[in-house]
Length: 204
Image (cartoon, rainbow, N blue to C red; front, side, top):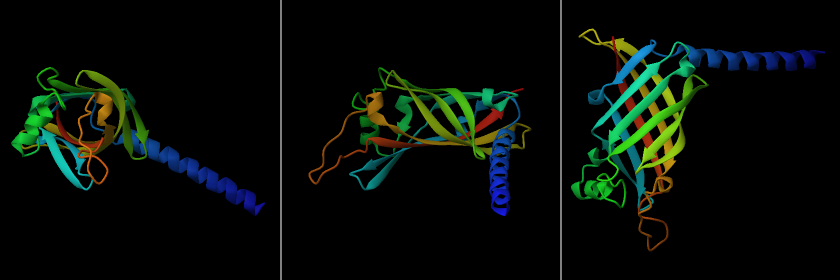
């Protein structure tokens, strides 16, 4: 009897924990309404492995975005666009190569776009599903999203902060350029790490 009661208690505690996590995730969210991305306080970063050991980090200097927070938070939507030609790594030759047809082909495909298709709780955070378009190719992706909180700036603007992280296989979007290394491996990793630190302003 004691063993059965203990097992039942453990099961109930686990269910309560899961329900609590889901409730917490649903309540940790900004006020409902339309939020406009603040590019001057947002940073979209991409990291790739170089010669298999070091990391090269880049970011996009020009982007726009809208976050529509619904009363039911799971019905919220996100759309973000970045100009492919605005990619920068701090090295001009490398930036020009990234903008070329070998990679982003910015002249023919000037916009990188993400449009959400779903939002679901994941512990105290969220999973953000959507369609990512690069080089005119659209593929489904799933990213982790954390709501970092809201605050009012000195000018009376209500702002909210989010962090989005994830990983993509660049070759799925036609980013296939590479050079094999003499000792094995590739010059540029096939996987890219994405991190988006976003700040948005509530529209009135």
